[in-house]
Structure formats: structure tokens, C-alpha cells
Image (cartoon, rainbow, N blue to C red; front, top):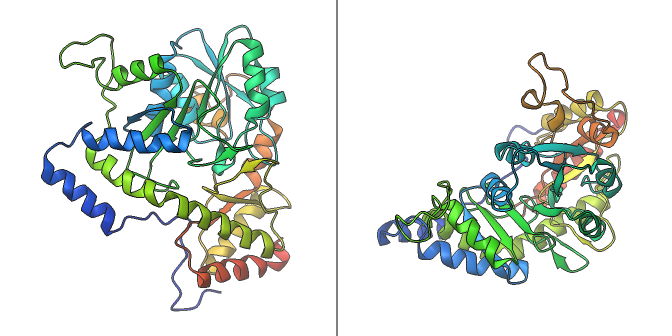
Length: 374
């Protein structure tokens, strides 16, 4: 059990240090605080992560997804194939533009969209595929891209958890028409709050810039109906500091994951697909046994030993109230066995880069001491 003087190791530990505070204060003292020079610099610097793609900063990862779908012209009558095993924002963005999410199952190893399930979900109204690079593991883009090309579909990558992840040396955010990133505080890097859209299409990038700024490039010269989804310069300044630290933090996450892989004995550690560069936004294990009851007991036992953990995600999107009828019934019958199994078995352990060697040892010892629960 946890010692009296041992604090709980949290499941996530956002970093906000003096450099970030100094950057924010510098912007506040300078006076240009919304979509000014810091935003432009952040966009230019982030481009290095995505092979020089155009980068458009917005106020959240959800906004990045929604604006991208808007810029691509998706709306009522269109369907977008998405995973149900993701944060609700993935499907919410589809609904927010008036399109309909179609849920496809996931691969059991990566927790990302199964290309075969996507192929089976494509219908006459399908306009796009939205793979999620879940937990920092890239989706099977080497199979999804050809599938989309055969059917004439757009790909919008939800890379909100996958900064600097790659597949066969190619960064996420460079496979589709656009990639969308989040800078929420628990992500691998953050800007307090914010998002980024990456694209190789200059025309699409310009449309995104219009849509984020009330439809105008020049003040009061509104070209389209847009929204206010701008990023502040304060957030961009914080993001620039964090972006500079991302390479070191990523390697530390990967080193922490490697240690956990080598020493955990009873939990099913996360596999990595061939050619995948996993950046471990989450270190997600499976608890074998009887599904959710056993998983929840393990989570409680870990907390009793001083180790926090989280479940991402206990309820698949297709079973959330927002996607069901007034009585809670599913509006469409979805056959998603791997999604349901993952929701019952997954548990994410701390893996963030500021874990100390002592904390890593405590995590290993606590997990390996679970004995009969596994």
C-alpha cells in the first residue's frame, strides 16, 4: 500500500514552467495578443514537424477538425467514417457541420481504425475518412490512403494525441487532405489551449484562415461566412516554448514506455506496429480477465498503492447519450466488437516525461504486486 509520505502519482502531469510564464507575460506587455506575430511564428515553427506543410493555428483541436470539414465543403447528406473508440470530439466535429458519423471498428493492437472495417463502412454518401492516431500510435495510413483514393474520399487525420508520431518515417498530419492537432494541457505539448491544421493544399489553408477569422483576410472584407476560432498570441507563445521541448519530451516518453514494457509482468503492454513511431501520449495496457469489473478493480488497487491511472475511453462514442435516442436506445445497430472489448479492458498508466526514476519504480512495483487481480 501507499506509504504515508508518498503522494499519488497522477495519471497526467502538465508542464507549465517559468519559460512559459515569461513568454506569456512578454506577449501581454507587448500588446499584440490575438492572432499576431506569435501565432505566425508558431505556425512557421510547427511546420517543421509536418514536412513543411501549411499550418493554420486555431483555438482548439475540436475547432481544427470542425473547420477542416467546413473548408472541405462537408455538410448535410455527407457521411464520415470515424472510430467510436476515441474522444467524443472526433464525431462531434462531424455532427457540428451537419454531416453524419459512421462508426467503424478498430484494430486490437494499435486501437486505431481497422482499414477492413472502414472499407465495409463506405457507402454512397461517404465523403471522408477520419482516422485517429490514438494514444500517439499512428493509424494504418499505408492502407487507409489507398482505400480513400480508390473511393475518391478525403482523409482528415485526427492527430490530436500524436505530435511527432510517424509511420515508416512519414509524420502524421501529412497523409491526408489535412491533419488536426490539439494543444490541450495534457497533450504531449500544449499552448494552454489551442489547435493546428496542417495541409499541403495552399487553397485549403487560405480557406481555413478565412473560416477561423469571421470569413475575412482583410478587416471588414468578409469573403465567406466564418467563425471566431482564432488562437491568442499568449497561447502561441506558450506553444512555441513547448514545441522547442517536444523532441526531448518525446524521447523521454518513449524511454519510459520501454522501461514499462520490459518490467511489467501481468498487464498486456501496448504493441507497436511495424514502422510505427509511437509517441505515447498514453501508455495504455489491457487488463486481462472479465473485462470492466477486473479493470476497475485493478485501477482501484493501483490507486491504493499510490499510482494514478485513467480509462480512455470507458464508453464508446456510439453509446454516448448524444448519439442515442431520447430513451438511450441506439439509433443504428453498430457491430464493433473490438471497440467494446477495448472500452472494457484498457487502462492508461503514467508515462509523461517528468516522471522520476523513483516514480517509475513505484509504478512497476505497484502493478506487479497486483497478484491475484491479474
